[in-house]
Length: 249
Ligand code: SAM
Image: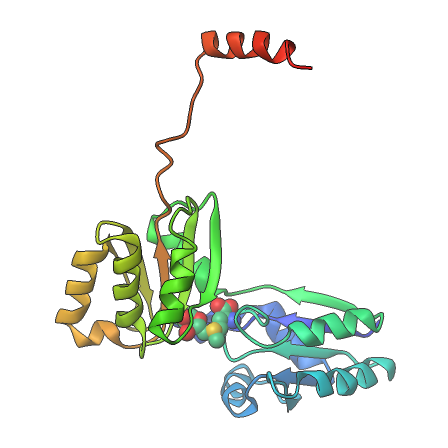
């Protein structure tokens, strides 16, 4: 049965390509890739010679047609992005939705996600978290977005580029305060992988003191607000509450 396979690729270390991902990419008729030139390197590394076609935010809608035609002819297609899992701050949502609506099977082939990788090693709470993707590029928009997250008790996760990492951290300091604990995960799975955890004020000083720490790709994790205001009722209080609740109409 033909299907669209949504295949995760590495976020840096090519060894993180899974055997199943390689097998699927070899066996499908066509690979829809965010940037075909970029993916050609991975294909060569893994010995895959399947035909590549580009899918990016500007042609996603047209590509549904190409992909659905393939599926109708009985051939399977794979979808990949430049790094990690497609659809996660990457193209693919429009294609997946369109292919499902056309009645075809969509099969996930899981692997790397940069923010899950960061979360697994940063030592910030992982029981509840919020993925916010990229913040707005301009400081005014960024601060506005951050203000909406001031009271958030779950771990906040952002993607950031080297061009804006310092400016974003400074905006976070202005909005959340210099004492908020933040983890910066840089160049995950690559040679200069660094995971640094500190309060915002010393973290920014540390990054400013070493321009190397401003290079590469970043996941920023912000500790949620401690819910110390949470009311934990003791047994006696619960008993009284039960009596009062029984009196309610
Ligand atoms: N689809 C990808 C995923 O599954 O995580 C995300 C793609 S998004 C366009 C690229 C952003 O992801 C980068 O700007 C950075 O914030 C984050 N990222 C990707 N690879 C990373 C890495 N090796 N280390 C740290 N962050 C990374």
